[in-house]
Each structure stands twice: as structure tokens, then as C-alpha cells.
Length: 337
Image (tube, rainbow, N blue to C red):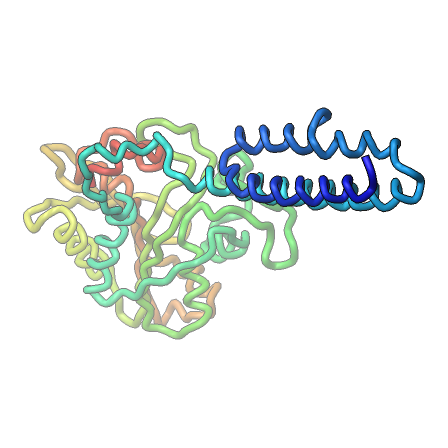
């Protein structure tokens, strides 16, 4: 074979290979193309093997042309292979049966805890309370110190509070996952003078043995009112109106003495539920020391505070028997609301 004949063969192979490559639209036909033109017994490989029969000068020219063609075919092969893969990935598959009847799109909805929180906030907002929110990671100063909770109180123990950093850092103390939304009470009072009327919703965290009525994470809605002349009658009237709006106008309520470090006196409020008294929240008149901590004069101002758990209220209102349902993300439960 002469050099000119070899070059003619190379040109012929190039034209035929590129024409047929464009028709190789699947991986099987692409592999057959590769074997025919570039395989160990392929047509281009045959030309490269026969270069030894040419004269040295002709061999260099023919060899260079054959190697250029080899590079062009390899690049064209890779490009066609990538194109075939992209086409295959975007093509419809058997995973979607287009013969099935159509289904309506199911709209999303609010989580039952969110629904309950919004209903509770609406009741207090209509009574003149403003909604404020705070951080879930809180300083020890606001979570405990400013609320008159002493340093040796069991709530500060490691088995009750999720601490991020237990070491006290100056006046702010350690860092923890808030155990209540009460820290927004001193934070708000530090920033404004009375009158104050706020409700603070949010998620809280405590180390709890979970069961049907206890969770280590839960929501709270806490409220605070401070002004001149507020009395226990204002507290009772506010909470009675709240119960009436949430549970119905004829709902009976009962107050009993209880203890909380940040109120004095403290009470719990129960509602008459199917013939039995069920406690739903704690409350009381703001402790004078809490007012002093934020710079308020307890001789001039009085206030009341309360805290209620939305999940517990929802459990009563909707007949839910296990608080863990709120956080298990089971659509069979969530879709009922």
C-alpha cells in the first residue's frame, strides 16, 4: 500500500465514521461503532498496523494523519456518548403510568401546634396583648436570674436543663436551650416603660422522660401585663376570657393556689372538662423582685403573668391522647387537622 492510498483510506474512514456516528443514538449502536472503527480489529487500527510496509518518509506522513484521525474519532465518540446519556436521563420512564386517572393535588396545611398557637394569640391580641418572639438559645441571666429563680433551684440542674455552656460568663451566666418563653418578659421590660402587655409564643426544651403527656420539646405561650393598678381581678378576668374563647362561652374555670418563683401569689387554672377539673396553665401576680430586676418600681407598678402549653390545650380540645403525635411527623395524624 502506498502513502497516497493510505491517505485516501484515512479520508474515507473519517467521512464514513462521522456519518454513521451521528446515527448511533443509543449505547448499543455506539459500542458497535467503536468496535468497527477503533477496536483492536477495527478499520483504523488495521491502517496503523500496516504503516510498517511504507517507506520511512511516507510512514511519517501517513502515521501523523492516522493519529490525527484517531484523536478526532475518540473526541467525537465521547461527545456522542455524553449526548446519548443526557437524552436517556430526560426521557420518560415506566415509573410514571400515564394511563392512571388524574388525582387532585392535596394542599398543605398548618401544623396543629401552629394552628393552636395562632388561635390562642388571636384571643390575647384582641384583648390588647402584643406578640413578641425571642431566641431558642438563651442566656442564664434571662432564663433564670431575672425571673427570681435562685441559683440552687432544681430547674437549673443538668438533669432538667439542656446546657450549651454551663460556665458563668459575667452577669449573663451560662448559655442554654430556653426552658420557657418567660425570658421575653424581662427582655421586653428592660426596653420599655409600662404599660406592658405581651404574649410570647415559641418552642422550649427540657430534659424529660417522654410519655403520653410529656415531651422534651414543646411549645409555650406566656403572657405579661404590667401597669399601675393591675390586680388579681384583672388576671382572673383575662384568663377567664381566654378560656371562654378557646373552649366555649359556658366553660367553667377554677383557680387554686400554686407556687412559681417569679409570681406572688401564684395560681393554677383548671377548666371543667367532661365533669372533671383539668389544669391547663399556671399564673400569678408578678413578683416584686422581678419588677426591681428590670428597673420598675414595685410600689408604683403591679402586673400579672401566665403560661400555657398549646399542645396540652389542643389535646383537650381535639381529644388527642398522646403528645408525641405532635412531633412524630406522621401524615395520618397531621392530615386530620
